[in-house]
Length: 353
Ligand code: SF4
Image (tube, rainbow, N blue to C red):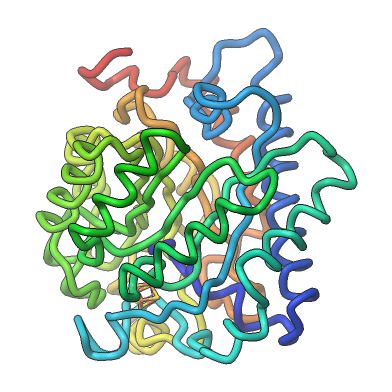
Protein backbone atom coordinates (compact mmCIF):
# COMPACT_ATOMS: atom_id res chain seq x y z
CA UNK A 1 0.00 0.00 0.00
CA UNK A 2 1.49 3.30 -1.00
CA UNK A 3 2.31 5.62 1.84
CA UNK A 4 -0.50 8.13 2.32
CA UNK A 5 -2.09 6.31 -0.55
CA UNK A 6 -5.44 7.84 0.13
CA UNK A 7 -4.53 11.49 0.41
CA UNK A 8 -5.42 12.41 -3.08
CA UNK A 9 -8.97 11.46 -2.40
CA UNK A 10 -9.66 14.04 0.25
CA UNK A 11 -9.13 17.46 -1.10
CA UNK A 12 -10.62 17.40 -4.50
CA UNK A 13 -14.23 18.04 -5.35
CA UNK A 14 -16.07 14.86 -6.08
CA UNK A 15 -16.45 15.09 -9.79
CA UNK A 16 -14.76 12.49 -11.85
CA UNK A 17 -13.13 14.84 -14.29
CA UNK A 18 -11.75 17.21 -11.72
CA UNK A 19 -10.41 14.40 -9.59
CA UNK A 20 -8.64 12.77 -12.50
CA UNK A 21 -7.42 16.15 -13.76
CA UNK A 22 -5.79 16.83 -10.41
CA UNK A 23 -4.32 13.36 -10.30
CA UNK A 24 -2.85 13.83 -13.76
CA UNK A 25 -1.44 17.23 -12.90
CA UNK A 26 0.35 15.61 -9.98
CA UNK A 27 1.62 12.85 -12.23
CA UNK A 28 2.71 15.44 -14.79
CA UNK A 29 4.70 17.19 -12.09
CA UNK A 30 6.28 13.83 -11.31
CA UNK A 31 7.05 13.35 -14.99
CA UNK A 32 8.57 16.83 -15.05
CA UNK A 33 10.62 15.98 -12.01
CA UNK A 34 11.89 12.84 -13.69
CA UNK A 35 12.77 14.95 -16.73
CA UNK A 36 14.53 17.50 -14.59
CA UNK A 37 16.43 14.77 -12.80
CA UNK A 38 17.41 13.36 -16.16
CA UNK A 39 18.72 16.79 -17.11
CA UNK A 40 20.58 17.03 -13.85
CA UNK A 41 22.13 13.66 -14.42
CA UNK A 42 22.91 14.18 -18.07
CA UNK A 43 25.77 16.59 -17.59
CA UNK A 44 28.26 13.98 -18.69
CA UNK A 45 28.69 13.07 -15.06
CA UNK A 46 28.25 9.57 -13.68
CA UNK A 47 24.69 8.70 -12.70
CA UNK A 48 24.22 8.78 -8.98
CA UNK A 49 21.47 6.17 -8.83
CA UNK A 50 19.22 3.87 -10.83
CA UNK A 51 15.92 5.59 -11.59
CA UNK A 52 12.46 4.28 -12.42
CA UNK A 53 13.02 5.50 -15.99
CA UNK A 54 16.15 3.32 -16.17
CA UNK A 55 14.12 0.37 -14.99
CA UNK A 56 11.24 0.94 -17.43
CA UNK A 57 13.65 1.35 -20.33
CA UNK A 58 14.48 -2.33 -19.94
CA UNK A 59 10.93 -3.17 -21.01
CA UNK A 60 9.73 -0.29 -23.18
CA UNK A 61 11.00 2.02 -25.84
CA UNK A 62 9.54 5.53 -25.79
CA UNK A 63 7.67 7.29 -23.04
CA UNK A 64 5.63 5.33 -20.52
CA UNK A 65 3.52 7.03 -17.87
CA UNK A 66 1.87 5.61 -14.77
CA UNK A 67 -1.81 6.57 -14.52
CA UNK A 68 -3.23 6.31 -11.01
CA UNK A 69 -6.61 4.69 -10.60
CA UNK A 70 -8.92 4.58 -7.64
CA UNK A 71 -10.90 1.38 -8.08
CA UNK A 72 -12.96 1.80 -4.94
CA UNK A 73 -11.13 -0.66 -2.74
CA UNK A 74 -11.12 -0.36 1.01
CA UNK A 75 -8.56 -1.38 3.62
CA UNK A 76 -8.46 -4.52 5.79
CA UNK A 77 -6.48 -2.63 8.40
CA UNK A 78 -9.48 -0.41 8.98
CA UNK A 79 -12.53 -2.64 8.69
CA UNK A 80 -11.40 -5.18 11.30
CA UNK A 81 -10.36 -7.93 8.90
CA UNK A 82 -6.74 -7.32 9.91
CA UNK A 83 -7.06 -4.39 12.26
CA UNK A 84 -9.03 -1.33 13.24
CA UNK A 85 -8.05 2.29 12.96
CA UNK A 86 -5.50 1.83 10.20
CA UNK A 87 -1.83 2.67 10.17
CA UNK A 88 -1.23 5.49 12.63
CA UNK A 89 0.17 7.83 9.98
CA UNK A 90 -2.74 7.35 7.58
CA UNK A 91 -5.39 10.05 7.45
CA UNK A 92 -8.67 8.23 7.92
CA UNK A 93 -10.72 11.20 6.77
CA UNK A 94 -9.65 10.16 3.30
CA UNK A 95 -11.48 6.89 3.67
CA UNK A 96 -14.47 7.85 1.61
CA UNK A 97 -16.20 5.12 -0.34
CA UNK A 98 -18.25 7.75 -2.18
CA UNK A 99 -15.15 8.99 -3.89
CA UNK A 100 -14.64 5.75 -5.64
CA UNK A 101 -17.99 5.99 -7.36
CA UNK A 102 -17.41 9.59 -8.28
CA UNK A 103 -14.06 8.82 -9.84
CA UNK A 104 -15.69 6.97 -12.72
CA UNK A 105 -15.03 3.51 -14.09
CA UNK A 106 -11.52 2.17 -14.53
CA UNK A 107 -11.70 2.78 -18.27
CA UNK A 108 -13.07 6.31 -17.76
CA UNK A 109 -10.29 7.21 -15.35
CA UNK A 110 -7.67 5.90 -17.75
CA UNK A 111 -9.22 7.70 -20.72
CA UNK A 112 -9.21 10.96 -18.77
CA UNK A 113 -5.59 10.42 -17.80
CA UNK A 114 -4.63 9.60 -21.36
CA UNK A 115 -6.38 12.73 -22.64
CA UNK A 116 -4.34 14.85 -20.26
CA UNK A 117 -0.97 13.46 -21.32
CA UNK A 118 -1.74 12.88 -24.99
CA UNK A 119 -1.90 16.63 -25.60
CA UNK A 120 1.84 16.87 -24.98
CA UNK A 121 2.95 13.32 -25.76
CA UNK A 122 0.74 11.72 -28.42
CA UNK A 123 2.91 8.60 -28.55
CA UNK A 124 2.83 8.05 -24.80
CA UNK A 125 1.92 4.61 -23.50
CA UNK A 126 0.55 3.92 -20.07
CA UNK A 127 0.78 1.70 -17.03
CA UNK A 128 -2.48 1.39 -15.10
CA UNK A 129 -1.53 2.07 -11.50
CA UNK A 130 -4.03 0.72 -8.97
CA UNK A 131 -2.84 2.98 -6.20
CA UNK A 132 -5.54 3.86 -3.71
CA UNK A 133 -6.08 1.89 -0.52
CA UNK A 134 -5.41 -1.87 -0.78
CA UNK A 135 -5.75 -2.69 -4.45
CA UNK A 136 -5.95 -6.45 -4.00
CA UNK A 137 -8.63 -6.32 -1.30
CA UNK A 138 -11.66 -7.75 -3.07
CA UNK A 139 -12.79 -11.14 -4.37
CA UNK A 140 -10.33 -12.42 -6.97
CA UNK A 141 -12.97 -12.56 -9.74
CA UNK A 142 -13.75 -8.88 -9.20
CA UNK A 143 -10.05 -7.97 -9.16
CA UNK A 144 -9.43 -9.82 -12.40
CA UNK A 145 -12.36 -8.03 -14.02
CA UNK A 146 -10.99 -4.64 -12.97
CA UNK A 147 -7.41 -5.38 -14.02
CA UNK A 148 -8.63 -6.74 -17.35
CA UNK A 149 -10.72 -3.62 -17.86
CA UNK A 150 -7.59 -1.53 -17.40
CA UNK A 151 -5.51 -3.67 -19.75
CA UNK A 152 -8.26 -3.44 -22.34
CA UNK A 153 -7.88 0.33 -22.69
CA UNK A 154 -5.93 1.28 -25.82
CA UNK A 155 -2.42 2.41 -25.01
CA UNK A 156 -2.30 0.67 -21.62
CA UNK A 157 0.70 -1.63 -21.71
CA UNK A 158 0.92 -2.88 -18.17
CA UNK A 159 -0.35 -3.04 -14.62
CA UNK A 160 1.11 -1.77 -11.37
CA UNK A 161 -0.79 -2.76 -8.25
CA UNK A 162 -0.20 -1.24 -4.83
CA UNK A 163 -1.16 -3.33 -1.84
CA UNK A 164 -0.27 -4.68 1.59
CA UNK A 165 2.03 -7.70 1.91
CA UNK A 166 -0.65 -9.63 3.82
CA UNK A 167 -3.18 -9.21 1.04
CA UNK A 168 -1.94 -11.32 -1.88
CA UNK A 169 -4.00 -14.53 -2.16
CA UNK A 170 -2.58 -17.51 -4.01
CA UNK A 171 -5.18 -17.56 -6.79
CA UNK A 172 -4.65 -13.90 -7.58
CA UNK A 173 -0.89 -14.37 -7.65
CA UNK A 174 -1.35 -17.25 -10.08
CA UNK A 175 -3.47 -15.07 -12.38
CA UNK A 176 -0.96 -12.22 -12.22
CA UNK A 177 1.88 -14.66 -12.94
CA UNK A 178 0.06 -15.86 -16.05
CA UNK A 179 -0.50 -12.27 -17.16
CA UNK A 180 3.13 -11.40 -16.48
CA UNK A 181 4.23 -13.87 -19.16
CA UNK A 182 2.95 -11.50 -21.84
CA UNK A 183 2.37 -8.14 -20.10
CA UNK A 184 4.27 -5.84 -17.80
CA UNK A 185 2.95 -6.62 -14.29
CA UNK A 186 4.37 -5.21 -11.08
CA UNK A 187 3.11 -5.36 -7.51
CA UNK A 188 4.18 -2.64 -5.08
CA UNK A 189 4.05 -3.64 -1.43
CA UNK A 190 3.87 -1.23 1.47
CA UNK A 191 6.60 -2.68 3.68
CA UNK A 192 7.36 0.60 5.49
CA UNK A 193 9.89 -0.79 8.00
CA UNK A 194 12.02 -3.90 8.48
CA UNK A 195 11.63 -3.65 12.27
CA UNK A 196 8.66 -5.43 13.82
CA UNK A 197 8.69 -3.19 16.87
CA UNK A 198 8.13 -0.24 14.54
CA UNK A 199 5.46 -2.06 12.54
CA UNK A 200 3.58 -2.77 15.77
CA UNK A 201 3.98 0.79 16.93
CA UNK A 202 2.45 2.19 13.74
CA UNK A 203 -0.29 -0.47 13.72
CA UNK A 204 0.62 -1.87 10.31
CA UNK A 205 -0.93 -5.23 11.16
CA UNK A 206 1.81 -7.32 9.53
CA UNK A 207 5.38 -8.30 10.28
CA UNK A 208 8.51 -7.87 8.19
CA UNK A 209 8.69 -11.66 7.79
CA UNK A 210 5.24 -11.54 6.20
CA UNK A 211 6.46 -8.89 3.76
CA UNK A 212 9.64 -10.81 2.93
CA UNK A 213 7.67 -14.00 2.28
CA UNK A 214 5.13 -12.27 0.03
CA UNK A 215 7.88 -10.51 -1.91
CA UNK A 216 9.60 -13.88 -2.40
CA UNK A 217 6.39 -15.55 -3.61
CA UNK A 218 5.71 -12.69 -6.00
CA UNK A 219 9.24 -12.58 -7.40
CA UNK A 220 9.35 -16.36 -7.83
CA UNK A 221 6.04 -16.17 -9.70
CA UNK A 222 7.81 -14.03 -12.31
CA UNK A 223 6.14 -10.77 -11.30
CA UNK A 224 8.09 -7.56 -10.83
CA UNK A 225 8.10 -6.31 -7.26
CA UNK A 226 8.36 -2.86 -5.71
CA UNK A 227 8.59 -1.88 -2.04
CA UNK A 228 7.65 1.23 -0.09
CA UNK A 229 9.56 2.31 3.00
CA UNK A 230 9.11 5.22 5.39
CA UNK A 231 12.28 6.77 6.73
CA UNK A 232 12.20 8.40 10.15
CA UNK A 233 9.48 6.35 11.83
CA UNK A 234 9.23 6.88 15.60
CA UNK A 235 11.71 4.85 17.59
CA UNK A 236 14.05 4.24 14.66
CA UNK A 237 17.54 5.66 14.93
CA UNK A 238 19.95 6.30 12.08
CA UNK A 239 21.59 2.98 12.93
CA UNK A 240 18.21 1.20 12.79
CA UNK A 241 17.63 2.62 9.33
CA UNK A 242 21.09 1.62 8.15
CA UNK A 243 20.49 -1.89 9.50
CA UNK A 244 17.42 -1.97 7.26
CA UNK A 245 19.32 -1.66 3.99
CA UNK A 246 20.88 -5.15 3.83
CA UNK A 247 17.40 -6.54 4.55
CA UNK A 248 15.97 -4.50 1.67
CA UNK A 249 18.79 -5.71 -0.58
CA UNK A 250 18.01 -9.31 0.36
CA UNK A 251 14.43 -8.81 -0.90
CA UNK A 252 15.82 -8.30 -4.42
CA UNK A 253 13.20 -5.68 -5.20
CA UNK A 254 12.97 -4.27 -8.71
CA UNK A 255 12.00 -0.81 -7.47
CA UNK A 256 11.81 0.99 -4.18
CA UNK A 257 10.11 4.15 -2.97
CA UNK A 258 11.37 5.97 0.10
CA UNK A 259 9.35 8.61 1.90
CA UNK A 260 10.18 10.84 4.79
CA UNK A 261 7.80 10.39 7.71
CA UNK A 262 5.19 13.12 7.59
CA UNK A 263 2.91 13.96 10.47
CA UNK A 264 -0.51 14.61 9.03
CA UNK A 265 -3.57 16.15 10.64
CA UNK A 266 -6.35 13.84 11.72
CA UNK A 267 -4.14 10.81 12.30
CA UNK A 268 -3.36 8.92 15.51
CA UNK A 269 0.25 9.81 14.87
CA UNK A 270 -0.59 13.51 14.92
CA UNK A 271 -2.00 13.08 18.43
CA UNK A 272 1.06 11.11 19.49
CA UNK A 273 3.31 13.77 18.03
CA UNK A 274 1.39 16.52 19.77
CA UNK A 275 1.71 14.75 23.12
CA UNK A 276 5.30 13.54 22.74
CA UNK A 277 7.22 15.28 19.98
CA UNK A 278 10.40 14.03 21.62
CA UNK A 279 9.49 10.50 20.48
CA UNK A 280 9.92 11.55 16.88
CA UNK A 281 13.31 11.92 15.31
CA UNK A 282 11.89 13.80 12.35
CA UNK A 283 14.36 15.13 9.84
CA UNK A 284 13.87 18.80 10.55
CA UNK A 285 15.82 20.07 7.59
CA UNK A 286 15.96 18.88 4.02
CA UNK A 287 19.75 18.72 4.35
CA UNK A 288 19.50 16.27 7.28
CA UNK A 289 17.12 14.03 5.35
CA UNK A 290 19.24 14.35 2.21
CA UNK A 291 22.26 13.12 4.16
CA UNK A 292 20.24 10.11 5.35
CA UNK A 293 19.02 9.36 1.82
CA UNK A 294 22.58 9.45 0.50
CA UNK A 295 23.70 7.08 3.27
CA UNK A 296 20.87 4.77 2.20
CA UNK A 297 21.70 5.05 -1.50
CA UNK A 298 25.36 4.24 -0.91
CA UNK A 299 24.31 0.95 0.68
CA UNK A 300 21.37 0.09 -1.57
CA UNK A 301 21.85 -2.56 -4.23
CA UNK A 302 22.38 -0.91 -7.63
CA UNK A 303 20.06 -3.51 -9.12
CA UNK A 304 17.08 -1.86 -7.35
CA UNK A 305 15.70 1.23 -9.07
CA UNK A 306 14.76 4.13 -6.81
CA UNK A 307 11.47 5.67 -7.79
CA UNK A 308 11.34 8.47 -5.25
CA UNK A 309 12.88 9.83 -2.05
CA UNK A 310 10.08 12.00 -0.73
CA UNK A 311 6.35 12.38 -0.54
CA UNK A 312 4.38 15.62 -0.50
CA UNK A 313 1.23 15.73 1.55
CA UNK A 314 -1.18 18.60 0.97
CA UNK A 315 0.09 21.69 2.80
CA UNK A 316 -3.17 22.14 4.68
CA UNK A 317 -2.79 18.65 6.16
CA UNK A 318 0.91 18.61 6.84
CA UNK A 319 2.06 19.27 10.41
CA UNK A 320 5.74 18.39 10.05
CA UNK A 321 8.29 18.40 8.57
CA UNK A 322 7.75 21.17 6.04
CA UNK A 323 10.88 21.88 4.06
CA UNK A 324 9.20 23.98 1.41
CA UNK A 325 10.76 21.90 -1.35
CA UNK A 326 9.19 20.19 -4.30
CA UNK A 327 10.08 16.54 -4.83
CA UNK A 328 12.27 17.35 -7.84
CA UNK A 329 14.10 20.01 -5.86
CA UNK A 330 14.85 17.48 -3.16
CA UNK A 331 16.01 14.95 -5.77
CA UNK A 332 18.41 17.59 -7.09
CA UNK A 333 19.81 18.00 -3.57
CA UNK A 334 20.43 14.25 -3.39
CA UNK A 335 22.22 14.19 -6.74
CA UNK A 336 24.35 17.16 -5.69
CA UNK A 337 25.27 15.58 -2.36
CA UNK A 338 26.07 12.19 -3.93
CA UNK A 339 28.38 13.94 -6.36
CA UNK A 340 30.00 15.95 -3.58
CA UNK A 341 30.69 12.65 -1.81
CA UNK A 342 31.88 11.03 -5.03
CA UNK A 343 29.32 8.31 -4.38
CA UNK A 344 27.01 6.24 -6.53
CA UNK A 345 24.19 3.92 -5.54
CA UNK A 346 25.61 0.76 -4.00
CA UNK A 347 29.17 2.02 -3.68
CA UNK A 348 29.17 0.66 -0.10
CA UNK A 349 27.04 -2.38 -0.95
CA UNK A 350 28.56 -5.83 -1.47
CA UNK A 351 26.06 -6.49 -4.28
CA UNK A 352 27.43 -5.21 -7.59
CA UNK A 353 25.73 -5.08 -10.99
S1 SF4 B 1 -2.86 -0.08 4.72
FE1 SF4 B 1 -4.82 0.99 5.08
S2 SF4 B 1 -4.50 2.21 6.94
FE2 SF4 B 1 -2.46 1.59 6.16
S3 SF4 B 1 -1.78 3.31 4.81
FE3 SF4 B 1 -2.87 1.83 3.47
S4 SF4 B 1 -5.05 2.57 3.48
FE4 SF4 B 1 -4.02 3.57 5.21
